[in-house]
Length: 221
Image 1 (cartoon, rainbow, N blue to C red):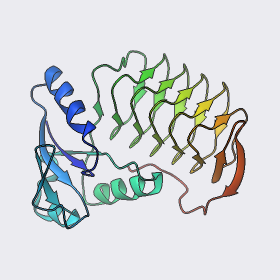
Image 2 (image 1 turned 90 degrees about the horizontal axis):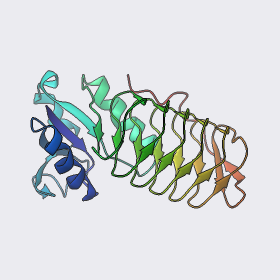
Image 3 (image 1 turned 90 degrees about the vertical axis):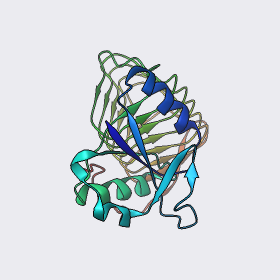
Image 4 (image 1 turned 180 degrees about the vertical axis):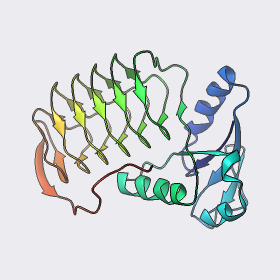
């Protein structure tokens, strides 16, 4: 399978790709898309930076799949993948082989790094990303275009709605709902439901402000 990676920023991507190629030798990375014109024509972790979205105009969309690596914010991740989808692009999952996917359901376009633990009956939508060392407890439902930074501790039976962004080391107690397009600050401890479009920080986590409701859904398909 040929894939194009979106966002030439984090060198950890190379280790994930190399680990995946050991279990699937047919995996071929064509290169990166990146909207920074200074990166076009150069290489990143050994792969060419192909350019921005203009590169897609001459591409056979049926012969390639995309994986979005962008983690700056959930809105940018969603908008970027949606634009690729509108141009006919299809998505693949890039999941480190250390991750046990037994009894886990996942959509497409998800990027999951090394040593993430997904317990039984976890469900993940489309276009989400979970970084190294995060634990997601049993029966947790993660929506579309969600980003969870490294070292998260998410207890069981959670509802993580579309577009949620979680900083490093977030902890969430069981049976909590995190409303869509909310931002949970690094190190926060969430002990109760979070309304949509909220910004939460602290221990215990408190809503300090609301974000502008730009999107209803985070689905890219």
